[in-house]
Length: 443
Image (cartoon, rainbow, N blue to C red; front, side, top):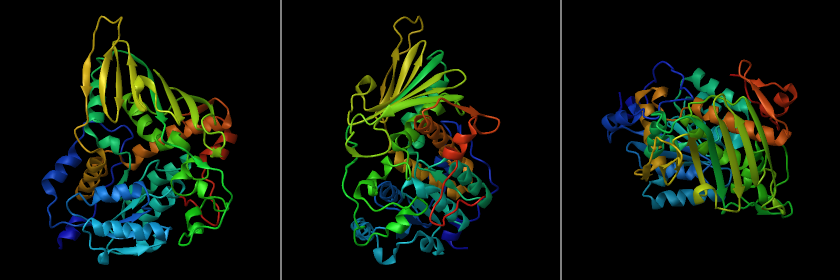
């Protein structure tokens, strides 16, 4: 048996990844460190390579034993650029095949795993088609653009028994894991409130411009895929797709799945009982967007409240930071962000808890890729730091925030039925509404 075939040997029996994995699990890392040899090769293809798809690819090829063999993008201009960029990274691009249709890439026999870095409305179909084709998958966050899609993705992973990692790379960064470990010690005392904020001064939607023909080299029909027909406009293309409901969920699902993930994970929580939200277009009322640039949401859990607060166009959030998570306990507040974590003592508490700021010591994205490759090597879905079930869980929590905002109602979740108590809202917002002949198949 060749070394490559040994590397991608059949995975073992499926073990469903819990949405609440231990923060300190390191089986994937130790397996990778001890078992991957330079002779082993994992061939990967990347679908959607303009933004995070490219970031993922450049991280992937730093992992020993990973080899890129295929790229796909509906924009040939991006595809040509990335082939040139790969050559600058000393990749032999003569051995890398280029595609405009992801289905052709999935037919390539020597592709073992794929990166899905397309706009959110494509994630579910492409991930399901990939595991059907026998590929392992690294899918960008949020894993689905609807709760129905999230469920279908989890079911497809289980049915086809492939390793599927969600791109919430903070799950693999050590200082985030250390912060959760500290929370679990109980030293903060009773945590009654968790505040999550995302203030992004650099994020700005496009100016309103007339519709136009797609640029030469862009397969706009393929870009739309299952989304409703809409004339091409530069204001909703490439990075700007995030601000339109047909393709994404704004900051709530873009940054929210990263930050809300650790808020819910740190509290070892499931899905909220009720959610209410409000917001609007206060920063950029004249720019091209549908999702709110300013929004607050209140999540009611069994033993605590979670408050989400996002704002585009300004950076000065809580603690003077543009993003973060604050676990507010009786004895102190733990503040966590990408720059580190610390514990600020509660002034009136007899149990003084103080932890000086702990800064990051590693590259979370690279660690996430090492974990993904290690799990493929071990054949154990449970070795993943962020399996598809975890990604689907937090995407569902964030989708509920958007549903509350869009419906202008306080929504209630029926845990037993796994749906909202309002059937009209279930039909309108929980389900995936596909167009142009596309269907979300029942798995």
